[in-house]
Length: 469
Image (cartoon, rainbow, N blue to C red):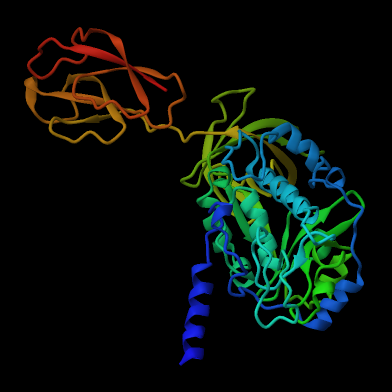
């Protein structure tokens, strides 16, 4: 009976220790949570250990695919970010690069974290996701309390420091894009990111910030310099002695030449890559001259309803057209509504697109750079008849004798306008009967309707001015 009671108490302790990634550090449990992942097989682990640890790489060495350094990017775009969970709101920057830059800094911080009584910093500790308390895992060979992390715990801490509300799950769940995309959608700094699965992508195509996951076994993040590709991972094993799991080659470390080891996994790994959602974005496109086609520039706007707008800034409105777009991972395809000609395809890479377009039976090169966010175009003004309900965020801008509506000489139909997606500072006069949208302010100044807003009886009225905040 005593053993049964102790067993119930033990499981109660474990269950009450589970916390969400966004909770404050004061809520961390004193010991490791229930193990959320399996470990590498010992022969796989020994192959990884044999590659050695790269202790020379610093944050100034790490680069984005475009060659810019992570540290320069942080200084320019995210200088106020700290890993103290202060909820600093990101500015108007590329969210994908923001996520990778923060995860990079968080990973470097974990590798350099000082731990009292542990001269090599954080240890490998199976089942642990927290760094505030020393603990051990029941059943592990090492029964001395250590401060450390396993693989999923390391990623958990990195996302926590990056302000990503990732669920506290193991590598089986971390191998699915749904887990990440739910976290992005619930994290204010990263709502424009989508995690895509590239499955067992060739190691030659790895980029800084890619996550490599073997479901239920392993997770690491790719770090790249101009000359090296290493893997940030927390390595060790529950069968190792305390001294080994806490030495300089275990816990969160850079594994050298890890791409060779990944190849040995026989395609059992998944590569996850954060990419940018291009919904409601504007791009400056350039058609590259060749012997069959001249060069010219265009502006592209990708709307949330799957519509793409095409216009040429040198001839505004002359070549304006609309088509359909689709983004499958990083592969973009769209047309501009001109039949078989001007079919576009391209590969999205953060703030750039490179690809081909079809015209005259041939493919030609084009590219584009991100110009900024774009609001969906408001719907055109339309008429409603007396008694019809005005949609939310629409207002009456004038009234006129009924033409489209039945009712005879005494009837007056209303012209209504969609105020959604208007730019800041947009002003409009509205007629009585309009509901002012929540994001608009009403001016104190008004003017007589002068017939523009008169009701069916032709009575006098006052128009109001409202302005978008």
